[in-house]
Length: 283
Length: 306
Image 1 (tube, each protein chain N blue to C red):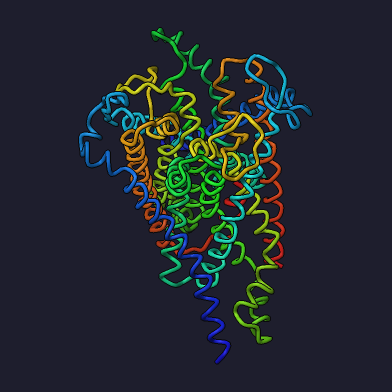
Image 2 (tube, one colour; image 1 turned 135 degrees about the vertical axis):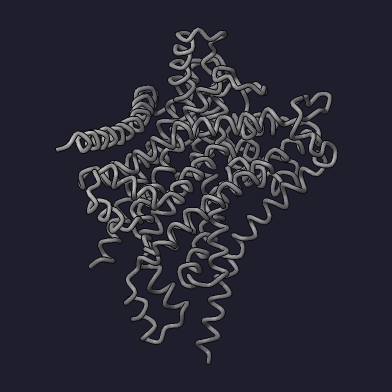
């Protein structure tokens, strides 16, 4: 081996090790975040957290019952609004993949996916809050629904494309119309995947804070009204984390723990569902 | 006959929903412009070049926010880009096969963690660490909150986006490229350099995608950047970003001019992120078209699970 080759091999080795280090560097914050969320959050999570209302400043104890209910209501509105639009748009893109219209829409969905969530919040504010001059659960739900749409569009399109082609051909050969083939055969085949994709999108928007700050606003009291400001886990965690009270910090960590657990569970479920679909496609 | 009209109805019906997605993007641009007219007409270009932000006297200059946004995103990318690229190379070129999926999954988990969780971790864990570092460096006053903390947290948040796209780009590079390099006697790293050279435009696109994310990130940054509007290159001083000022002041904006000024900041943020994203998509797309290798299956798995 010449000296030159030895030098080149050494350089190669050094860079290979640096790449490995890069993975470690990225995993350290992940491990730290999960560690702290579990350490600070798991201990603070108790039955009161789910069932009690926030206590006034200075009194310890209490929970986030109103915020949990609020988040559920908000993502409920988001789903009602975002899932049909996202899914049907995704179906269209998968059924007519090559048209100019489809590429423009696909591009628009990508653009929408990159728009900062706070900007979506301003849009929802202009659309829902400004006309009636009142922050409301509805406005928050609309903001979250808008954020869901590009994710749902993408997953629906890709999952429908995963459905084996002979299923579609079989349906069409039996004389089914396009709509019948799609809604009767293809969508049901892709449904488990689409559903988990929707759940992941829901989990993602349930973790959003910025677009809720001036749409749903937040609420210290119990409210389920769609036309009133409503509490949400994320905004409550945000407010509590910035307060000077230890007890509120503790609850903020508990809220963060709940959010992370929800997202972990859903993303693992989704991973398994997609893997099953891929296997089905291959066989 | 009937069938073809049925099919047309299906196509138009689903197409209407697809058109709605287009309409949303156009609607955002229209609405943001309409709602910031007062500020646009009153201040004109001065809005972007002056630094006085005084709602009480009705003076609005957004320069410090633009500065903070760009500075924090650039710093974040300086940290994140090499790390993300290293991860992409390690997972697609170097790691043993059984480690690939788990490592890809773990790094992408970083993208699934909500911004608010990064924020709370930033406030209670990262900021004290940064403060210790500042004390050691002799910075005065050592606050902990400031540009450095914000850039670090942003870097962690954008790594998964950049690395997953870069990985996909490397996967798309034809293996003949590497084989040719090996045949010429290249070492492993030299062969990887050839692959990177081939996918250069796509990799730049991946970095820009991360940049776009960093520009629009709101809550985590708001919680650690210190929220003080000032144009300074100092890493330790508290600063402010466009997204953060909207998050902090929007619900309290009492008069219409104030609100319009904030929405104008939102409008600029919208325009910047759209331009950055479009450029990044174009770069990635042009790279993919060059090899014309379809990779949808792997892509979905990542997007669904991320």
